[in-house]
Length: 158
Image 1 (cartoon, rainbow, N blue to C red):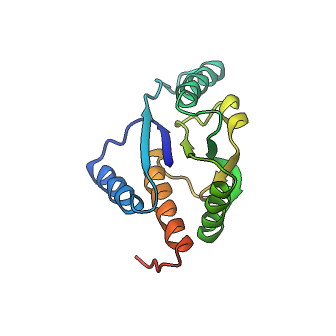
Image 2 (cartoon, rainbow, N blue to C red):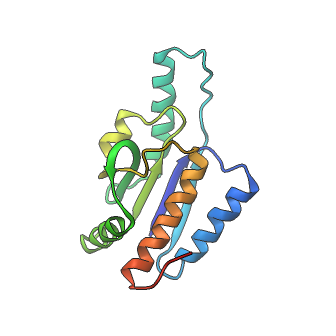
């Protein structure tokens, strides 16, 4: 099973439609699920300590959806970059190592807590560019779909 766990809700219809489309494409290969946890209010007037509390609270909400035997891939600017073929090989390797669930975790606008970083099995930097967190869900879903196509030696040009 593939799970994408993220802070906040996808609000724009075109983003929900895009995410839904990729999840349907993944279904023939593997069951998928989206989990959204509520984001915490983080006004610009927050102190650094308040921002750390926001990350801690959001992180704990995400951690509630992660089991001990899950393989956690955390989207992280300080993570490892992987192209599509490398991601495909990594997913295949994770499955052969006996993990039943792979969880891609997308934190909130302030980043993620140390607890969440420590729980991650792999930290993945999807790009040097900055994307809205809602759009990251679509990018992750597309890359997972592409990974399965690569694993099954199927063309993917769309």
